[in-house]
Length: 366
Image (cartoon, rainbow, N blue to C red):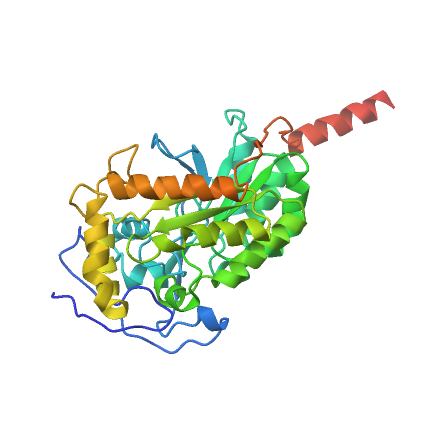
């Protein structure tokens, strides 16, 4: 079936259901009315919640250029609808599209906290940092109702196993009470991703994320609560958002961020044509300039998956962006403090059998 090109769909980043690269059949969803969310969370295409029956919740990463080994993702797919999201192709392995399906058909692991506790109770588990949102955002809109991320944080806190959060949603501040407790034993760090400070641009680029001002408020609230918080200027889209890097770093530092990082735009598999389609709909006059810049840092291609430079790109423009980041992060005293997460306080709670045995021992001693 030929993919039908669509115009802007309110509340969605994609304009179509791009065909699944593994399937010969293709389904195109129709927009519907849906008004149960905050203004920036209102799509016309209704979200479908699907049960994820996975029997494990920890995902192991073996990519050498990603700084963590284990992550927890309570949700597969993401309502935030960021058009450039590198995780979009993961929906194709579920028999769905990386387009509208990815942001409107969300797989939910309703027992994620219980599965996490089971994993940490195993004697084979070696205490180490677990990243929330290693693939999709753990504070996407559905978290308001399901509270699975909060449940997982409660488990991490119970075991005093360190965790790290990456999000674009102000909703993270809802859990400041738990995050404060974890911060006391160096058990948590939060990173807020900011792509642009342009509210109008974000409304189409990342339609159901918190707006830039709300993300800066999240940084401020977290910092005032004593929770280590940083900013990820990501992704940097050459020809569209790269000129904002200094302003984003300053705004984040002023709000209380103490660390910073950045990544270059990545467009694997179906993400490349989806991003081009987004440019056609929302920034047609900039399309050629942006695509030229994308290829300029990827050796003439839309994407290269080489470890070591896929996050930063290569060539003069990539090097210039790296220099800008270095100069301004130093100017605003970001990454000046050395801090690290600690697993030194990890402790497994006693099992029911152990509690019963201890109770019997106490009884016998009496």
